[in-house]
Image 1 (cartoon, rainbow, N blue to C red):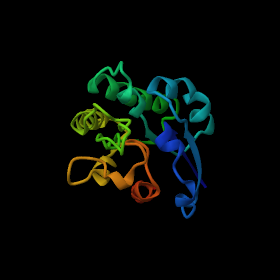
Image 2 (spheres, rainbow, N blue to C red; image 1 turned 90 degrees about the vertical axis):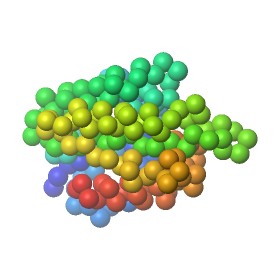
Image 3 (cartoon, rainbow, N blue to C red; image 1 turned 120 degrees about the vertical axis):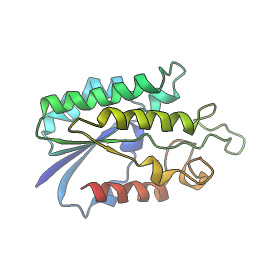
Image 4 (cartoon, rainbow, N blue to C red; image 1 turned 45 degrees about the horizontal axis):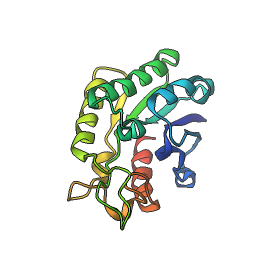
Length: 183
């Protein structure tokens, strides 16, 4: 039986794992809410490499993007892909899929600002293009989940999100379909 590790931040941590119960694999959710790419890197040895998975689905960067010290799309994409390379170096036979960042809903939600207030999906698109560019020519595969979640108005649809970033069940259904296609 294959072992699959889902590795990421809260968007992975909160993934409803029952949506993958029909996949014939041992699937380990190694998502950690609040993690930046650096924090993911600090735990990669015991949360990914120790499991010796056949497949890694890696998603991260949302917290880095939202921080006031956001380093820019090139630096962030480089950090994410370098983390994938680190996994690949330790586990050369493991297939690594690097997911795009998901779109955000940047408008106010009722009286509350979105968690993505002041951020733009155009910047997320630039970041995703850079992640894809950096994955090209490596053994890692870029997976564009962004395109499945973005609305016609250039926003994550309001009914897909709780707070502008985190996903509702209906959006996780779309992510689940993407994971089923990969696996």
